[in-house]
Length: 430
Image (cartoon, rainbow, N blue to C red):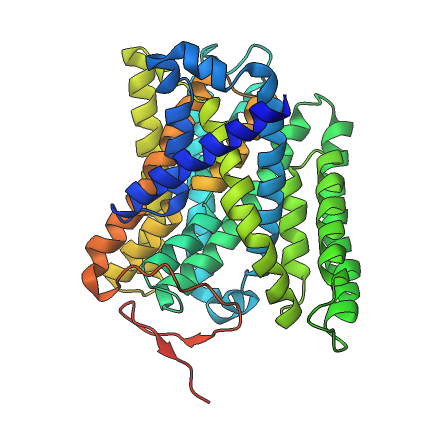
């Protein structure tokens, strides 16, 4: 019933806000609060303490509505993330970002694939019929991913915007996530069981990306960046929303997550005053109302109680250690080899090790496609939460009070800073 949906949304948002406020006192970003809120309202906490109330508040038939609203919020939010992607960072810090990117992708992929082969035959983790190749690709992607949106939020809240650490981490994180999206597409393609299905997804992804760069990008520039547009014009917002929805539909048909299409639309959208106004309108709705539903949906599908044996607990601990070692330590070492100081290299490793949103996208897609079991899903959600929670305390330990938390500052694609050392930022001079 519609009235039940309204009270569900009210409860979900209220709990998200309360937990987000609480974790902010612990110097954690709001996304952590939203992830924890989902766990509290799901079978892990509320379902364990008051199962009758949990089923009454979130009956199974209503989960589909929450899922689709959360997916819509995710698509809109990933468009905003794409718009805020600073292309200049990739060019400005190409050397350091390349070294960190190679480490952040290559080491987790290799170690993740090997680890997956050791557990691929466990029916508690992978459903019957899932091929070792599919299991390996999924696990490698899940270990290799970096939470680009969460990383950007951490950088803002730790007042590191424009520092060398932030620029290198954002540039490397964008490359890491691009690889993760491609791997997710490969995982979904292998489920078809045929080379034809794999080829359609792979060729479709390449063709779609090319179309966005060669066709959509110049078209958007012509429409949005080549002539004055009145501030009260509504058609630019409608145009970009249509582009986002069509791109999401296209990538979904190709077997790729709709968020990938939305991210690409944002990445090719010109940066100007009109675009800034549009993202200002979209962000509050997506980030404060719809996106929390995605996190809550993930939490409602997570049952920590499924990790109920010493063997599963040890595997979960091993997954966390593997994730931190193959990502955080590997990126720290790569940054040191690239010539960055010990503290800045450690900060880059901490930022790259956070997984958060993008990890949950991959896990949710894998669960819905029956690549993994609810047990492995819960174990991987725990890993995503732990690695994301670790980042902020590590940054605080490394930089202390010199970089106080600020919630009012926003990441601006137009602001450029000169490369500096020691985590301090210096505005570029003419």
